[in-house]
Image (cartoon, rainbow, N blue to C red):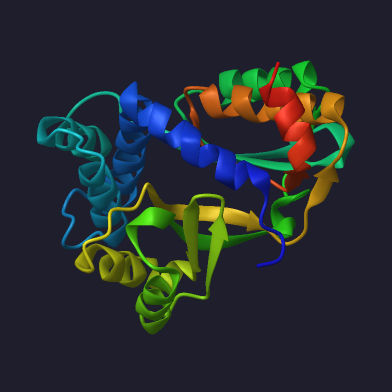
Length: 251
């Protein structure tokens, strides 16, 4: 599909690392806290909370961690004062960057995010400056050696998915967020185990980075943002030429 960016692919590898070091659990706990805060602690009555719990269980977050996060959200435990904020800006070469955050101190986080942009030759922008360039989509990533492409295509299109594309040694399934859970269930029921399954923001168009120095700056910005403790998700609209990625990877 048009507009798919290299960052979405790079994040798959980072997600596996994040899961190993426990960072993913922290992000998912925050998502549970916010869902419980806004919709109550009963997952049967709070769809957003149920989805957040499902995501946590999918990466083996302990039940006690999930329950503590719910209680923080409902106010039974301290630590549930989180606010959802979206920061938007530009990286080198005018790359659009959208950063979704959960924070207990908006002023602190804003200053830290602004500094990260500046360190990477980027600039934090105003609300709405780049959000219009992205579409919210469900994305499910499956190892290509786990299933035949035709079988996967038949499976997910029947469940309502929009597209299946191969990216290296992975298949990426794209769908409307409204039916994301249906598509994910179809994949699970078929015995397939996704490496990544989440709602993402995919760019409508992309900026090609053919220069190694520019690509390094953009990748540095994305890495710094993604590693920030308050950041839940980072989206961008760049592509890096294969030869440039190879050059950077060899350093």
